[in-house]
Length: 162
Image 1 (spheres, rainbow, N blue to C red):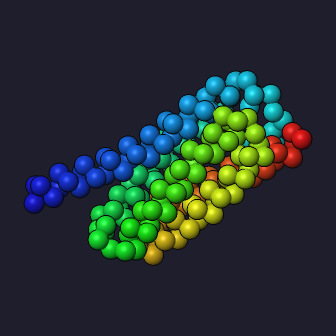
Image 2: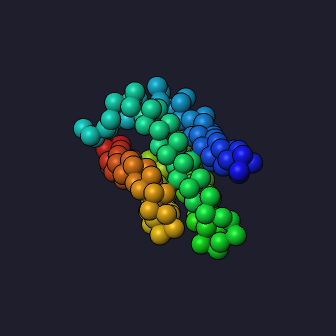
Image 3: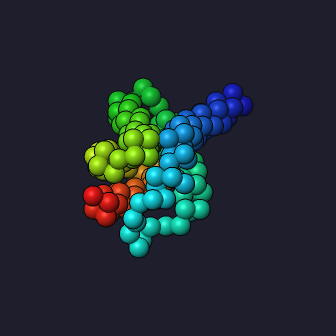
């Protein structure tokens, strides 16, 4: 019993750390562009204040990690679980790629192309997770909602900064 509990805790920690690490990698491209390029852009009125982004993303990555753990705990021997974890990996890679495209390349156009793929991948992941575990799916809803706001923000920046 103790061995199983220790394994569960380790899996939970790995799941969260993997997600937070993706955020850290994305921040390597994001942070330098904020006071320079991003600050110079015209932004829509619904743009959240800059200080909101870091705590929101740290929280979202933690929720994503817990959601991944809930699915992982169902067992990788299951085909639907392996498929869900694979799709999760795709959306996580797209999440990092968006930071590279939007902030690293300083391109609202490339960022928008990536964020559309990311939005679809997050929606698909949320729905697939929900089919396997309602709890896991619900844990991804804030990420999907924030991603929807980010998509609208990216599109608005694209329009306001031709």
